[in-house]
Image (cartoon, rainbow over all chains, first blue to last red; front, side, top):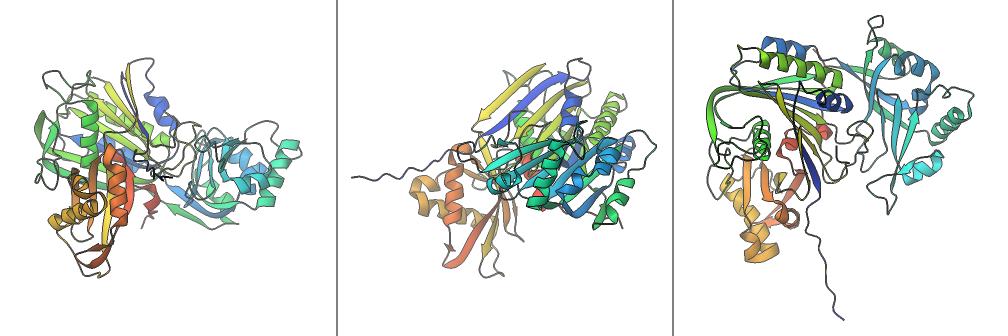
Length: 367
Length: 120
């Protein structure tokens, strides 16, 4: 009898969606894409041809809201009637469990649409006694389950059967976690800080602000792209979208790609054709960034690009999602397998055309 | 509006790796670092493995950390070889693979290493 050892040498699967559209197009999904990507931990902007970040854009970066870290919050606190009425229903609430690795631990999130999403292990799921779905990414083994609780339902109130069942489940399992929290109240009557006073009495709360960082480049080679062509030009007049995306990644990682150092070390260099730009600026902000902030930032970049004074050919805005978030876009399930990337980049041209790159890893549904 | 969806195997994979020697004072330059990787591939897959093109996109001598690029079809081989390496030049050492992604952009940040910033 012969024994053969079968090694799977295929790399993990991934998906990259590249979309070309115009901001002026009625069917353009640029706004929906930003709004539905709930949990961002880093937003970065790259503008070539600029030595300094335009003041209007810098102002939007500075305006990014602070966020809170609330420690050891039991899940029963999230179905508290006062909490639902005063915060979940009266604004956009973003909550994500902190330091919970979705491939190892239970992870929880509250979406601005009012859903509480729980991604829990089989044991917890069985103890919880709530109806959920097995995770799409390990259907055969059924290791993880996803439970959704709609907090905004009219019948989700104390005394009702469903509410009591959820409450008993949470009390029985004693689930708790540290939560990152950001809340934007509807209208201007309430202050965003009032959510802090709700938790402050009973739990340890910390207020954090976004950390900004700027890096400047000089004499950088830029790949030439054509706003209406995603594919490489037939006679090599412009680069393909994929080549450009790899190059932008290299710039963000601080890789010098003006010239390949040596064949033995690396063969990577800026794709052809390219042009030299005297200066370029890259600005990033890190923290817990609500999609609303990304929206206003995108608008500020667009109006700067429309402005005739600007000399830059394009600008690139990237948002990185949390790798351990239970959802990526809207309520699409997200998981971690070797990597949990869920990020998007807008390449904004001066003629209001844009390219949108959406990149997701193995355990993710195609955006 | 035009939409291109690429699914399945990506053309390239990127790995953020760190080389650690038992002797903490030891550092290696980029050429030696490349040789360590080549030796690892050689001991696991022989001559063919050693000939696999691997690009060191970025290398930091101080921390001995690097960003590597390898073709999708060779990614699992490289990862395996790096994991199995335990000695270089008779000195005990190990590779730590910190992040792996088919998108170079994804290596620019990691939410698992997110540090919460407080205003002073």
